[in-house]
Picture 1 (cartoon, one colour):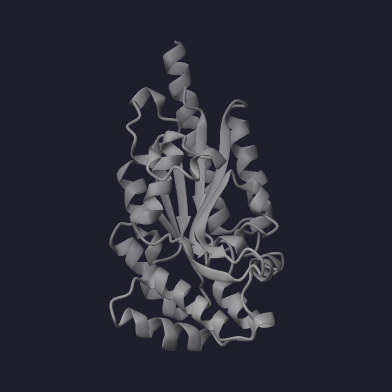
Picture 2 (cartoon, rainbow, N blue to C red):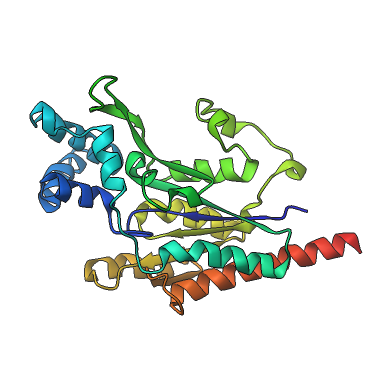
Amino acid sequence: MKDTIAVVFDFDDTLAQDTTSGFLEHWGEKPGTFWNDKVNLLLEHGWDPIPAYLYRLIEASKNRPAGERITKQRLAAFGNKVRFHDGVTRIFSKLKATAESVHPSLRLEFYIISSGIREIIVNTRISGQFKHIWACDFHYASQTGEILFPKNVISFTDKTRYLFQISKGFVGPEYENRPFEVNRRVPEENIRIPFEQMIYVGDGYTDIPCFSLIRKQQGIAIGVFDPARKEKWRQAWSFIEENRVSNLVPADYSKGSALEQSLLMAVDSMARRIALRGRTYQG
């Protein structure tokens, strides 16, 4: 019996406010100017949004004096300061308890697939909750730690690659330098986590391919939005209109919130289905 459930999260605007904007502000840059003037200018010339913002970060860093540039250490230090949406730090134990209450052998694993900056995310205080974190990464100068070039870029459909890695069990340090391994065919009986046993939580356009894949394969896709940011409402509502998500709720994980209840019910439903299937096979 495949007795593992994967709960996969986007990061920025899903678990916390946008950390790239937060870092820019912390670094003394104006996020609005960075996104609206610098990044959008590249989009008008055909750039993909993700390499566009990574390029602009490298460019902005090079324009600073040596002691003020973006470094691996500076990104990590900011990651230590990241604050999360209400209830995030407690949601993991609640979800695990829910799965175990259905059947003690059921396992819950958490993952992050993000278009944000990996060095920030892996240094947050919740990073230890996740079996693996995939996010955009830089090549850093060996002596100064300065960002030099994008090492890993995770854009729209790129995110689905990591869902396949989770499903096939290609997760861990041994697969980080084997990018083509995900294309290897795995027999159905060797699939580690079927897509129907995945829950995906995200907020934005980069999550749409994952929403679509998970929904098509009978998993559960939950869209979240910030109710305080009216400009995000239309985007969030389009997820419902286009049948992209199973549910759409505010990004609030606190006790009794719609998102907490949605996640608890999703885990409970999957756990009961897995437990029932196991009893059916045994009987």
